[in-house]
Amino acid sequence: MSKEENRRAMILVGAKERNRTNDEIAQALGLGVRQVQRLKQALNEHGPVGLAHGNRGRKASHAVADKIVEEVERLYKTTYKGFN
Image (cartoon, rainbow, N blue to C red; front, side, top):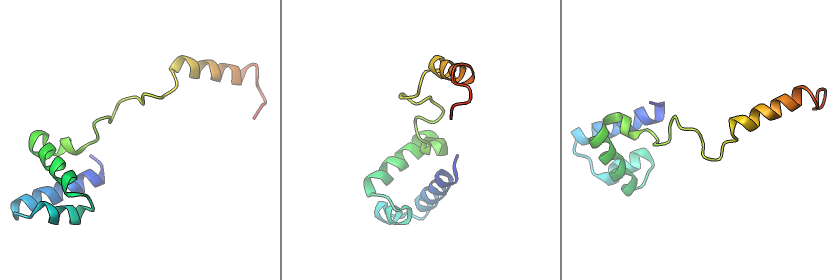
């Protein structure tokens, strides 16, 4: 977990123990009330790991294919050697 996710988890757990309102939690986190509700639900269902972004660890959908990257590197080292 990142520092920010850890901080959010600590605030959400602490707020739950102290019976804080969603509005108070939202102000503490700098988020909207709806976002706090979503985070609380994720925390209840999946624990602190639920606060992590869902795409973590996945390759970007717009990433250049590995085959193309290899071809560009090959051309850079051979055909276009010395070019900037």
